[in-house]
Length: 437
Ligand code: PLP
Image 1 (cartoon, protein in one colour):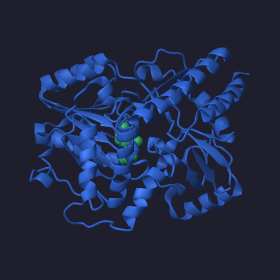
Image 2 (tube, helix red, strand yellow; image 1 turned 45 degrees about the vertical axis):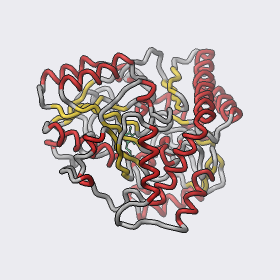
Image 3 (cartoon, rainbow, N blue to C red; image 1 turned 135 degrees about the vertical axis):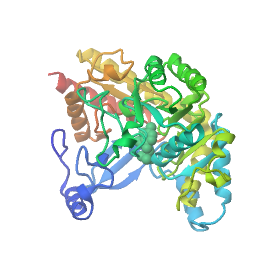
Image 4 (spheres, protein in one colour; image 1 turned 120 degrees about the vertical axis):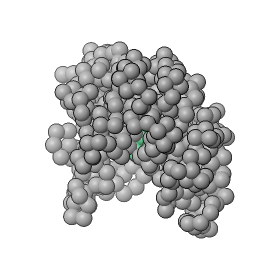
């Protein structure tokens, strides 16, 4: 497993070895291979247990998909009830899909109608394709370090080592060079870098896609100048603005982070937290744009055997209903826990004289191993990745689970308590003290 690998028990190891015989690398998503060859057997609330019975306090939260807590009865009970009644019909629509659509449209101000997909990758793929169809243009602009899934139109310049940043940096082999060349890269929080691309490719850019907060590199908060600037620029240039809220949507507020930014994008993609761990994502936007999809008689194909599956719809309806009805308690509570964690980590690092910056928003926190301020991707290249890997490994060994990748974020859920956060800070202090020695 290389540097930073955590020891796992014999039961985990045995299951992982068995997995390697039938699954390439033993995992179904490459990012799960990083950290340790674990096998988990149980998850509940803010905790997970591995096959050896070791308990972990979980801030990974399945890349942020867990918003209320693992196996939360507020979501799982309606799912169980649904399974006893209906699954997948392959015909027409279910009342659950209507309820889901209604909740999405009521929650996100810029969304008149929306389509359900299974993954965020499908949602951003459809957004980009729709933008190309509507504008008749070729290019898409994304930002260095932003991640929008693994399809060809956005699989460029995700997290890059310094020597590859801003160069041709494929996420994957096997992408046609032509697809690759149609994706242009700009600098987050720098509208000028986007303007320069519009100048270089006049009337050829179909869309600008951006993460509402690029949590895939921790937490670079967008400035208002940036988000307002993108809105104005794309409107002026006749391109669509696609706000990717796959992580931020529902987690940072019912209306997404775009509500905080007072931003009205043309299209929005969302996923993860919307269904508290069940596979649901979606794309939404203004009615006249969405009518180009073939489901409404348009010419942009939308299809998917499992789109709108009753299990996912029941989970999403239950999650969104809870957030709508109890958001006044939920959001301040998890935001306060997130702030407590960020302030605690920063205080500990400062007291120990470690060059580190705790960042985040709401329930999301991360620890960069470098001094601030951190405004753009270029600043992130100063991060001490090795220090993060050592920090992560030692936290894990003490039962605190965070994302194993440097420059990523962690998540508090509704199941976490102040005691959990304080315990985590105690452990972090112990670990950071060791690292400072
Ligand atoms: N967009 C963002 C901002 C993401 O973080 C991700 C996944 O992490 C995606 C899109 C892709 O979503 P999925 O993994 O569900 O395909």
